[in-house]
Every structure is written in structure tokens, then in C-alpha cells.
Length: 164
Image (cartoon, rainbow, N blue to C red):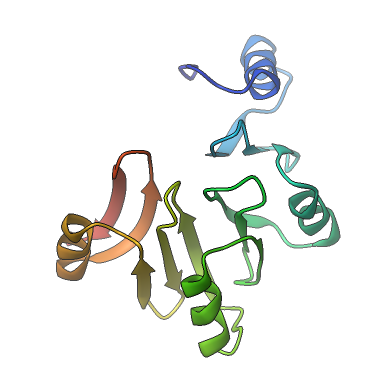
């Protein structure tokens, strides 16, 4: 089961429908963003999303499975990482696009997080991480750990999953 709070109405309907009927597939991954944007993947491999047209094009054109989806501060800001390490993005902060260029556009990503205030985090398969636009408290904590996953919320809130 799951607990459903204030979600976009189309996502809420899909999740309630899957919970009511056991024949429907269950959600296995959900990414939420501001402006009612979302991406949800189900255990049968199907997915639903609401976001900019460029996100729809990126998802429909790829034959790869999605590893992660992040939504940023504007309607057109998103970052998709595919299971093979490839990616597609739109409207991301300059520092993140600069990093991708400096890394020669390598298809070796594990995850990318975008925040509502321009913050971002990138983790590559070799374990290296980069981030910017974050608070001093975030920086201090992340430097002492090896972040595996980051998710940003409003008002300088965040989740960091790390290994000891």
C-alpha cells in the first residue's frame, strides 16, 4: 500500500486506481516536482509523466529504461538518467551543463538531482559526486560522506543517502 497526500490529480487517480485493483500494476518509482510535474513507473514497465514537451520527446525517443528523473526550478527544467548511464536534460543550471561538458558528455551517470532554487547534485558510476547551489550545511555534511543519492525540497530541505 501507499499513503497519498497532496499529489497532482492525474497522478493521484493513477495511483488510487492501481491500489484498488490488484490486476493493475503497482508503482515502483515516483519522481515529483514543482508545478505538478511528475514521473511514475510501474512494475509492468509502463510509465506516466507530466512535464514539458521536451521531456516527453526524450522519454519517447529513448529505448532505455529510466534510472532517475529530476525536476528543477522552472517548468522546462528536468534531468533524466537512463539505466545505461546515458541522459537527457532541459533547462538545467549553467554549472551543471558546464560540468557535463568538462566531463566530455560521458554516459556514466547514476543519478542527478535538481532543486527548486537552482541547486544540483550529480553522481557518476565511478563514485565521484559534484554539487552546487547548496547551503553551507549541505556542503559540510556531503563533504564528510560519500552521497549515494540526493533529493532536494523547498526551503533548503534535502535528503542525502550515503554509505558509512
